[in-house]
Image (cartoon, rainbow, N blue to C red; front, side, top):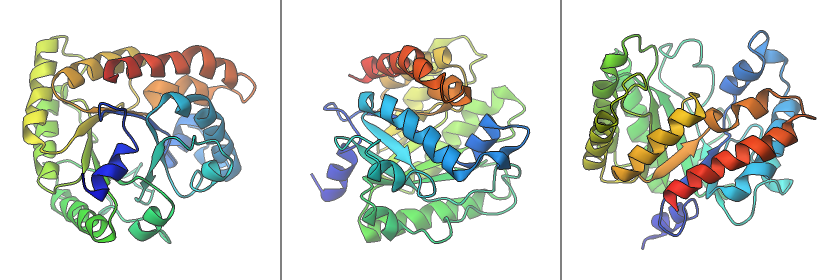
Amino acid sequence: MNDLSSMLDDLTNDKRRFGVFAIDHRDSLRAFVRPDDPDSLTAQEITDLKDQMVRAIAPDATGVMLEPEYSIPQLIDSGAKPATIGFTAALEAQGYLGDPEKGPTELLDGWSVEQAKASGASCAKLLLPYRPDRPLAEAQEQVGRAVVAECNRVGIPVVLEPLFYQLDDPSLRPKLVLETAQRFAAMSPDLLKLPFPVDPSDPDEDHWFAACRTISEIATMPWVLLSGGGSFDTYLRQVEVAVKAGGSGFMVGRALWGEAALASPDERPVLLEEVVRPRMRQLRAIID
């Protein structure tokens, strides 16, 4: 086993499956918690929210997704992140939420792959708004290839997360996600984080399985399922199908903890204990 594989194992269970708690949100977290005035959510409020949720949920996860503005090193220094699990470090700058086609994704100013490795991260992470059928596709692919090359040079695994946007016709989702998987798998990242390849409005889980199986055939590396902010019950079913079809687990965000993030700090502990932790354990049962 090479050093990069060993680092990635810090995010998995003993079956080398991923059960990762994603809390690396920034702009999207502001918009989710304060939709009428996102900028009113202060840096300290974001850090406190993340600290509270990571303390409650990360012990049931195989890893946690963090970012350098509000959680690296804050949640490490505070002890919120368990020492027994690894973390991913987000690389991308923000500012694409309102207009995903305003330009190619850039790395966060003042942050680098080398700094991500120095922070102790087990893996770097790059999210790219991406549509293979839009003019920005080639530029985003160039960004992905450049980051993979830099991570290889520095010696840290990388997970690429190409995320579609502005999809008005749900029937196009399988073709779009599968083509995206093919293009990004060709870049040879260490891990792919992908949307579910079939719209939840399609009730036929045979279609779900077939599309997930195609991703497993395309990808020579592990791939995991992002949650995309949908309902938890739907996401749970999607993870079950994806793992049966050869997927390597999940990296779950708002579908897991959305209600807790919207609650007051006083109400949040009850939701974390009675709603969010049982959800994480349901997901863990699938991969364990």
